[in-house]
Length: 305
Image 1 (cartoon, rainbow, N blue to C red):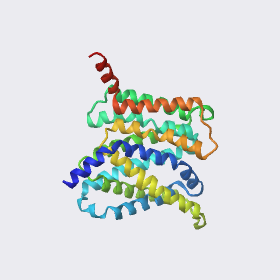
Image 2: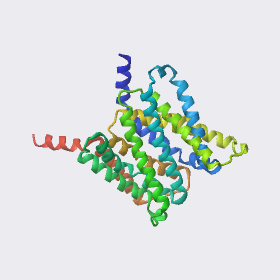
Image 3: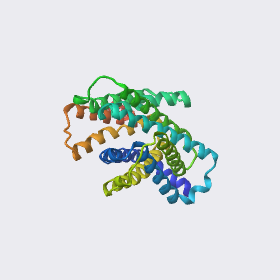
Image 4: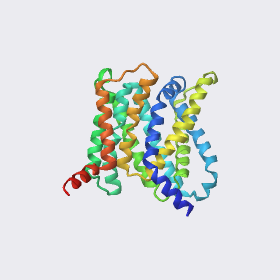
């Protein structure tokens, strides 16, 4: 009975939790940028996700009795997809602009409905497709206008590959979370992500001096572990468990406008008219995906009575 209550409560807050995750990620951009400037990518990811896995493993210790090989397989695949997504996105960012990186990462909005169709044999409806293209159009206006608009390059290719693996991660969460404890799955996802990151550290051999771990970096790491990982990624997985993958992909795209919003608030970046138009398109995409414009149908039906 208590498990049923928990399930009902989590399902009720699925959409708000996904939106909250995008707000946290949007706010963490400045922290992430500062941390990457002093710590090699794989070191940052390895420390961040090792700590997050340990924290969640302790917090959800009473739940571990349900863990079996299916949890291990699901958590490992989820972690591997997310690891590849972050890796290609990060290396793509080195070779392209932040705006284009955000835009090409967001191709998962379009990929998810069709990838889920192939894997789960569930055809997306017209509203899923419309929302996906509205979303990608909005992110284009937000991300690649002005100084960010430049020729397609190798960094963009790497970022597109990252976007594909973000789509794979969304599908993996939908597939492996069904009928399973999402808290344990998320912990295993973090643990496998950490293992792959430490392998990345060994392969790249990037040295790190103890002197780089000053109070600013330590504060940044704590923020990334507690809020961006234990908080936001857990919220994403909980929300996705009770949300259709196509809808989740559109909701997750809100990370782009929130990222720009916090950049405007915390840095010298200034908004443009095209950015506001892009925000409007993304908002319209969310409304389309969440409501399928049913309120217009009800209004029309009511006026005919």
